[in-house]
Image 1 (cartoon, rainbow, N blue to C red):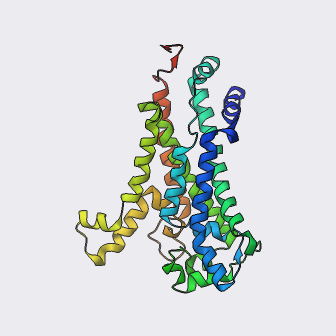
Image 2: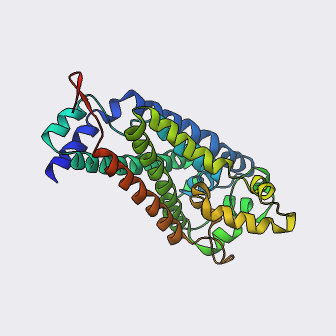
Length: 294
């Protein structure tokens, strides 16, 4: 365990001075600014406040925002494979090194998700309050066509089923789970196909959920319009991206949609599969060291 933590500490050396990390955080801030702009327009025009974490809820409450935010990890410093890696393998073992990467990836994913929450909250903090009550802005977006017109995923059933902070914890968990699986896909891709190939694997993982559109799937399965409900339910179960969208879950209104704990199990199964693939690959992975292979 001491050697594993040593690998994790080394990976975090100069973390916030790393150009990749700085660039990713900058893109994350720009994305948060662009997405929260829809809510800030309502706040300015109607002079209504928001609850402190509502911008995070409405910003990352749909599939497009989840996809864009998670894809920023493709530009980050994940996973950590450097010229020092062979030295670490000599001092430890491949399993300990891989465990260190797992811990590092988990902490970095949590950190990135926390920054998303921070950025969206800070951008709207001028007209926000910390109380655990839905705001007038949320009510306007949810109970009128305003939210639909602005493409803000503020829904009545969310506000009627849970408090803002409770909703924040659940959206944070789903976003973290999706980003974590994406990070592990990048790691496995690098191990099997070489460095930088993991980015391509992560890209395919992302566009899989994006291209899994109900209309496309309905055409393939020859479904009529009245059968679209079945298609939507199927996609909510088989698409990792839809599993990460809070509004695509059973909130007490639709028993056929996945529940939150079922989505967590779904992502856990994906992570376990990726861990098994990584462990199997590590047994034969040829790390280059001083011009030779070890």
